[in-house]
Length: 254
Image (cartoon, rainbow, N blue to C red; front, top):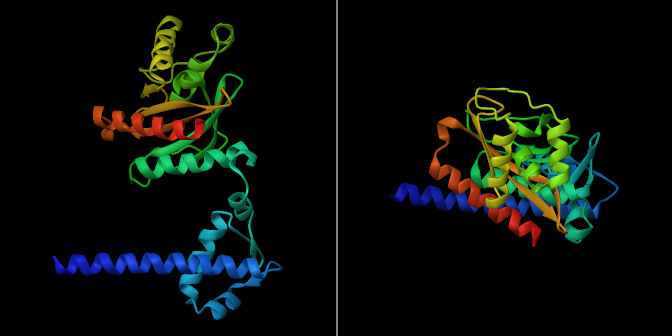
């Protein structure tokens, strides 16, 4: 018991120290906006080079710093922090939602937008599980077999939906893929009523998807979805994922 408590306290202190160092680095680089090298940062802030390298890499990855050769400068992410949310590009407003969905579910989470009769992955974060689903940014997939696609189809008006069924091919990717128009329309009715679309191994065997439309100013601007391997998927997991999507999307749409 004592060992566990000591370890927990040390972890908290270390986390706070890392946070303080991160803020110190940002403030130092902002004060030297012409650019500063890592060695100067380490000397000025008395941060070990090994720790500094990790923190700098993280700040660059998150776009709070930019790197040109050996020089570090303030990144565009700092401008986003100062801007009012309404002035940010849509993708930058959605990115934190995807991250929150992935962190809170620990399942692969993505933001899709409609391109013709396909869904394109615009933002995606992969789960940390050993067994996980991954999808590359820019990947396009037919709407009928993705949870994100069904969520988007359910948001279409009657005329647009009729045009979809007239124009879009609906290939069968697995034994579970729903391709029949009547059956798919019934699923879309259910998704429209519940606000959630669900697929079970319709595109990739062993993967279930849960998707929800993302609205802005009363118009659909894409959909968020989470992909869950069937070995971890059950009624409890489904309910938790649905509730999480509802909470994240409602916070954005308000």
